[in-house]
Image (cartoon, rainbow, N blue to C red; front, side, top):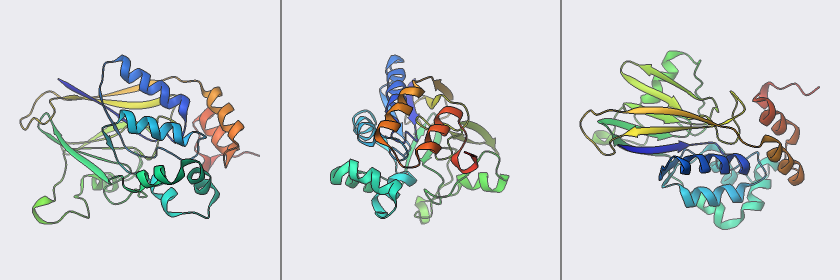
Length: 247
């Protein structure tokens, strides 16, 4: 039986990243896939990016990873880019949009946000049609290469969940560094037979890892990250900045 740890949305939070990588190692899991948003919000983009490059055999592109490459005149992105330097930004620029593989007879697709775009957000409470569209073939696929996967895993929304639709499975791994459901780092473990064409046992495990939130807050304060107050509130409460009231 093969095991793959799937992580996402680290967002430059090194204490959370370190805690999750240590937990994965303690379970003897050697295959780690990352679904993007290595950087953004948090104070440690370099440490996180370098660790992901070292530990992850697969890394797909997130919306923050894309925007830090393309937007130079917005503080949230320019602050990150200045610290990353040219070589790391170039690494983010070449990350693939998706990753497909087979496990226990299932065709599995991993994306950051959706098969439509890294910016197309799908929440677990969205209308069924929007969630079913997560199984659509990729827009870039044509002819015989297009297919509808059996299992889709993604990140982006920072809410861990699993749902089933018409024999297909949709799961979100949650966020390592910026969870917006409960204030513990989140990731998933896929267990099955890698590359197996025939149906075989398969499971998806959700893992929550406590980490030192106040250390992450201290590091953000010392670095004076953009949107600091909103970021700290997200770490401490799990409340998304778009609905926070700081008055």
